[in-house]
Image 1: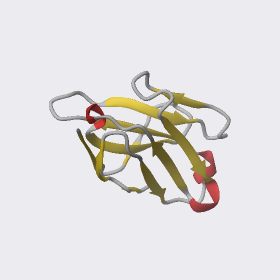
Image 2: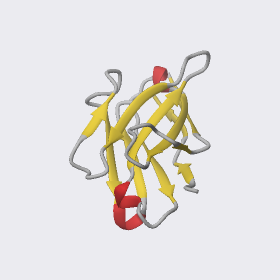
Image 3: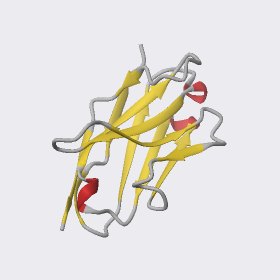
Image 4: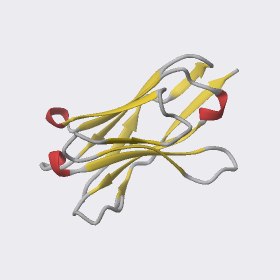
Length: 119
């Protein structure tokens, strides 16, 4: 069983920055593809960003391109989401997810961390 624990959420003013972290259990983190999703109040869950297990490919939702950066540190079993130029519409619970086993589906999820951007 893989456990994912997010941290780094909080309250920030519009235009500010936050860095989310997601620590994963397991000895084969270097084989995990990782992703970030978010769910705002009254909204459906939305894909934010993903990184392939090799680290050579990253993906972003249209609403965060150019502002957010995903990275993966295999030595620390941690994936990060650097969020810059934050907007009030970025307010959401952010979830870390892992895709393990080659199916391409995200099959492990963290409990989420709240990000609130004030105007």
